[in-house]
Image: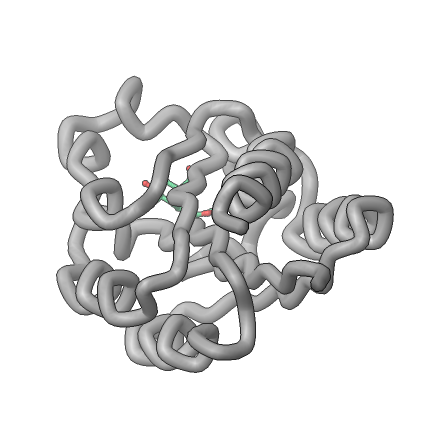
Length: 148
Ligand code: CA2
């Protein structure tokens, strides 16, 4: 049976490619989605790709992922550093979640060093820019393969 994965993006990531290219690169979220869709097709996995600026919408998306998807790649944006609600939603889904960031959050401001998500994620990928998305897909699909 083929796997289905959700890539979920949080606040302000809809602005990618328009500002702060020195931090976040020049690819837009649409570019990243297209890269991920191509990779998903090549890997034979189903992919859903979504973005919201609203914490509750992200919580709902995680709840909805249960039963629909086998795993989630989550770039929660700044909610990474603030949201216990997102952490609880990840725990509730019981799905494997990979925490993803474009930038190396550990090399940036102190307030970005702590992640509420890290403790409930299977792992974290950060600092590789847009390339982190396909890297996270490889990691998640490998993990799901090992689950069987
Ligand atoms: O590096 C990442 O992927 C982050 O999750 C991005 C978040 C930031 O709050 C996290 O600490 C790390 C911010 C996304 C903002 O994206 C923008 C893109 C273009 C212009 C302005 C913001």
